[in-house]
Structure formats: structure tokens, C-alpha cells
Length: 242
Image 1 (cartoon, rainbow, N blue to C red):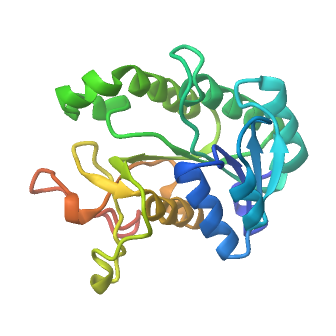
Image 2 (cartoon, rainbow, N blue to C red):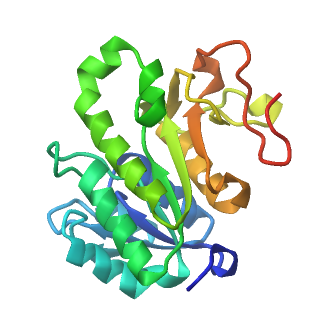
């Protein structure tokens, strides 16, 4: 079995990379000259991924055979990021697609996964607003299904739950403090927003940091943060929040 400690650096297998956060992850990874392979449905627009120099493999995350194929072919020496979303309740990329990725990783002995979920999923649902639950409650339930399945597997897992996602280039808020515009919090009580490009930076930072394994971390732009006074930025296992 390939352990995360022995993975070749800069090699990424990406699910959900054709748009949104996943595309930003691919963009940032390729800017670092990482070797990126992405599974995408044949009908998806993959031009942006291909123009970045990512290798696109045709397949559907809702087809377990397609997922097993790409993980068997490319995943054994790579870290995996899943930033998928969408689809009907009961057969969504958030839920069933994540189940397929996790099951294929376990079968192939692939260990390292960063799973992009959402605030309002899992134990953070108790802190979500009624407005959010009314708007996307079923989606959050699907994301919870994916999270729970991933945690039950023997993986080196990091779950990232972003707040409300916004498009645009990476922000400048907090950069004067050397923090960037997105931060991680080891606390489900936070609320706020984060840019997709800033979230992508945090995804790669988690891949770089083994201290994030086994953690569920909330991702927020601190300029938009709403949280109890005792919430602090997560600084890793060796420097826990005060």
C-alpha cells in the first residue's frame, strides 16, 4: 500500500476540476508545475483544464467503473482532491460521487484525500442559519453523506468546509499580515465567505501539511468572519489555536 509519506511531490488527481473551486485548484497546481490529471464527463467543457496543461480523462464520477479506472491508472502515486458538486439528491456528485471516489481509493490502496465540502454539512449544520438550510439543505445533506463515508474509510483525509463561495481573483485581505485572504479554522461555528481562488490555495496548503490529516477545517476570508470571540485561526497541530 502506498502511504502518503511516500507520494511523489506535485502529482495530483482531481475530481470536479472543470469549473469553480476545482478549476482554481488545477490552475494553482499547474502554476507550481504540478502534474495534474482530472476526471471529467465527456460532455463537460474541458478547454480551460486542457489549456492549463492538465491531462483530462473522460469519465463520470457517478459511474463507479469510471472512477475505479482513473484511480487505478493514475491515482496510485498521487494525492487526490475532490471538489465535486451538483446532481440530484440521492445520486449527486456531493454524495454518491464522493462514495465512489473513496471506495476506489480504498480498493487501490490510495490514501491521501482532501475533500472540499461546505459549512452547514456534518456537525456544522447545527450552527447554520435557517436561511442557508432552507436554500441548500438537501445539498448539505448530500455533502454530509460524502463526508461520513470518507471518514469511515482508512484514508489520510482532510475535509475542508468553505463558507459562501465567491468568484474572482485571489483576494488581498490579510496579505499585509502574511496570511492571504483565506484562513482555516478548526471550529464548525464560523460563518462568512471565501473566494474560490483563495480556497484553492488552502486546498494545496493542506496537501503540503500532514498536520491537516484527520482534521475537518472551516475555510473563511477573515475579513468576512462571523464567529464567537474564542475562535482563532488554526495554526497546525504544533501550534494549536489559543
